[in-house]
Image 1 (spheres, helix red, strand yellow):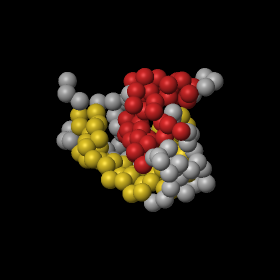
Image 2: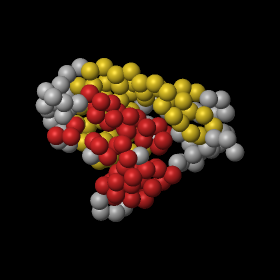
Image 3: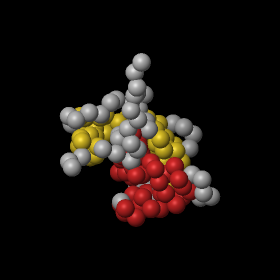
Image 4: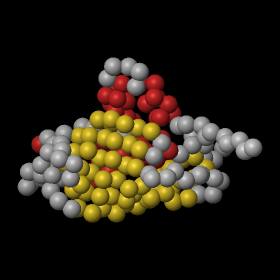
Length: 163
């Protein structure tokens, strides 16, 4: 018989889980996140779902994120991708580890003129050991009709925290 140890979850996922019991819990979580990482405030995000291997975030298409063509700005889309990918990574790795984005490739497929949703998803969750590893996180940013207009692949360096 084998026993498996459950890795301790990180603080962000623990806080997310607690706030889900409250009215407006995801709004409160998102506001606190934007206080910790103020740049994300520029897109006015709202986290809808967070668990190991998955994060879904939405943002309105408002004047502050539009380009000169009136469409959702490419860099605002990258900001959405980084937010979803980073939160998903943080919720996925054990609290004994840390992560940092070290690269991102982006494919701009279409224009978006609506509110947007970013989804970071891992089909399988790897085991994280003592050696640093690179985790490639795919993120799709979709318009209100569900069309993917930006695809990103964010490479995260995951390593054990020093004591």
